[in-house]
Structure formats: C-alpha cells, structure tokens
Image (cartoon, rainbow, N blue to C red):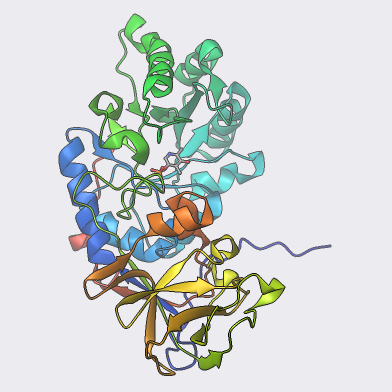
Length: 403
Ligand SMILES: *Cc1c(COP(=O)(O)O)cnc(C)c1O
C-alpha cells in the first residue's frame, strides 16, 4: 500500500543566502504592474491570469496574493493540487483549473469552491451528480476543442455538452473556452480558423436567445496583437511575467520581467590552452584563460541544452558559459577579466544597464520562454519583493463580483 497525500507543492525554501548563494529574486510589483497594463488594454474584457507551474516559477502563493486584490476574473492553474494549495494559503479569489478532470477529484473541487473544466458530457454529468449529492453548487467552464486535439469536445460535436449544461440544476456554467494551438505564430490564419469554429459553437446561445457564459480564448501569443480574440476574458501566462511567447519575440506592451536569478562565484582557476572544461570535453580554451565555477546547474533548471551557448553577467559584462552545464555547477570563461570568490553573477535579469532575458535563454536552449521560467527548480530559494505583504483581511478583500 502506498500512502497518498496531496503534495504541498512549492513549499518555499528557507532563504539561506550564505549557505546557498544561488537565489531567485521575484519583483511582485512588476507582476502587479504587468497585470494592470494588460487589464487596462483589454478592457472591457477581463483577465484570467495563469499561475500554473508555480506561477511560471515566480511562486504560486505569492503571485496569487499579489493579484487577488486586483480583481482577476479567475486565477487559472493547471492542476487541482495547485488550486488546493492556494485555498490552503487563504486565497479566496475565484480559481479555475484548466486541466482535465479525474472523477475522484470532484468532491475536492466542490468543497473548496474551485471552478472545473468540463470537457465531456460524461464528466459534466458526474459533476452534476456529485453536486446534487452534496448539496453544493458546482462551477464549471465548458472546454471546446477547436483544433488543439487536447482536452475538450470537438467544435463539431459540442451541441450535446452545451445542451446537457442547460439541464444541470446544480452546476453554474460560468465560462466556455477554447485554446489556440498556434497563437505564437506570425500568421494568424490558423488562430482565425479556431476562433471561427468557436463562434459556430457559440451560436447555440444566440439561437436560444440565451446570454453565453464568459467566453475566453486568448493566450499571450495573441492578446496584444489581435483584439477580436479577446472576447469576454483573456488568459495571459508568459506575458503577465513580462516575456514574449517565443524566443524571438518581445512583448509589445510595456510589461517587464520580474525575475533576477543570481549566484556567486565559488571557484576561480587558470586553465591552460587545450585543456577541455567539463564533461565530454566539448570546449577547451585556445589560450591561457580564467575560468570561474558557479554553484548552479540543470538540477536547478539552468538547462543543459544551453551548454556552450549561454552567457552570464559578471561585473556587468557578458561572459560565455563554457563546456557542458553540469547538474549543480557551471563554468564561465572570463578571459583576463577579474572575478573573486563570492562575486555576484547574474544568470537572468539585469545587472546595471545590462540584461539577460528569458527569451535569450529560450533561444540558447532551443525552447520557448515558458519552459525557461517553469524549469527554475524549487531547489532555488525565492526572495520576493513588493506585492502585498500579508494575506488581505476581509476589509481589504476586493473579490470580483461573480456571475
Ligand atoms: C498555459 C495556458 C495559457 C497561458 O499560455 P501563455 O502562452 O503562457 O499565455 C492559457 N490557456 C491555457 C488553457 C493554458 O494551458
């Protein structure tokens, strides 16, 4: 028998700066400002900030507490356990779990007043039955698949789900949504096609002269540049954290990154020409050079794919990561520059006028900024600045009005 407990995800690590010099500084004010920029530009559409994967590495609970007073329509997460973690931390804002539903989870959703993504008639029926049995009202968003082939009913067979949702007496249908498979591409044609399919589904409500529930489609790739897709609400993830949706794009709106990932020099050596550095001997200096070692690696989320490509800021200068990135250490060539044990080195974020962006790390790792942020392991201690300093009490709580 295995003892199963809902994991207490992302329990913050104690900040032991002298003990472990690597840390992630999170500027919660930047996230709040980014939220305001997005909210004001998409209005009257509302905002459903996406906080999955530890709020893209920024700290689930801290980000939720920062955004809760700003009145998000829902805080979106991927998994039930993320939502439970927020409730346990005292977050009372509406929460939507975007991911697929497993039947056994339903009572937990109801108990903690968490909105469910219903992606089939069977699942909706199971929700209705559980709600009827417990006398609680379930909150549901209907998920339509318009071309992602992930979860959701196909747009061409969504009728029965919408029909069934009207029959449910214990379910409040708060929203209906779909997700774009190619939101980050320059060409909007595939996204337009998905939006048209979604519009076909929504005719169900027009034909019955019923107001539709909150309709939401847009993720970061389209929010800034395609007003028609904003509908009633938008779901920004990476944009909320100040980053572009692709390695080669930058946000158009004045949002800013909130992270500074720093470490300190733990070793300094002079390496002779031709002596290979790190596993596999993938790099060797052509001339005598100075190599520093940093106590961070792919075990912290500093991705191995960036080996021999990444750069870091040492005393405000860009310096190359050389040789393979190890699980807990990386080596940097500082040429004949100066660095001492204990000097701060910036892996991500700014140092004076220089800056390394998540989009750059994504390019070095051949991935998207989302993965760079989500990969920063919980082994790295987070240090939060700004935002709200305590859990808001009732008087300070400005929860959004619910439909
Ligand atoms: C992750 C996710 C988002 C946010 O995506 P970004 O590209 O980070 O904006 C929005 N909607 C759904 C359904 C998601 O899974």
